[in-house]
Image (cartoon, rainbow, N blue to C red):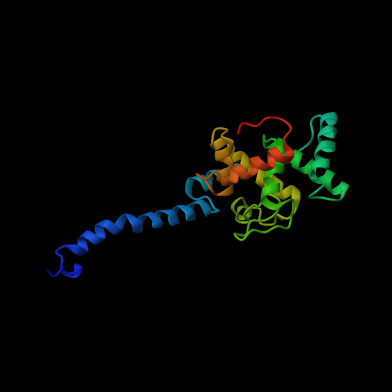
Length: 213
């Protein structure tokens, strides 16, 4: 008995399409999801809200409130920062700037140090493949968004002001959920990879008090 060829079987094309559709769609969905997680720029209402937040907060002043507490913190953090910044004077200057920008934004300075370690390893001239710049890897388009095109994101104080305020915005938007805020800051909402890296840096080097992980 001769077996009929598949090309002669009735309805084989429709059946093949039905069976193959899930196999073709699944990789496509993975690809689209990966692209969404890698998207570095917010859009629409989120972008407008963040722009308004930066316009309102970026110029606020900064200072230590308690001199003794500041000195204790600086001495402690300077020792932890030494593998990244070898010059003692530069370490203290950077730590003062981090502490000021973080506390002004309602963030734990140790969290900001962990973010910087992950983002740039404390290289103020770091530039990502997407064009993000400086210690906290801020996208340059934000300068134009808030009408400050002259800002230099390789200047530590400027970069920290932007980065801390952006992280503050996402932390407030996510009702204090630190992991979700960090993922949004990184442009990888829905992924645990970036928050896990920041948490690991924080636990391994910068931790001084609990954070709500």
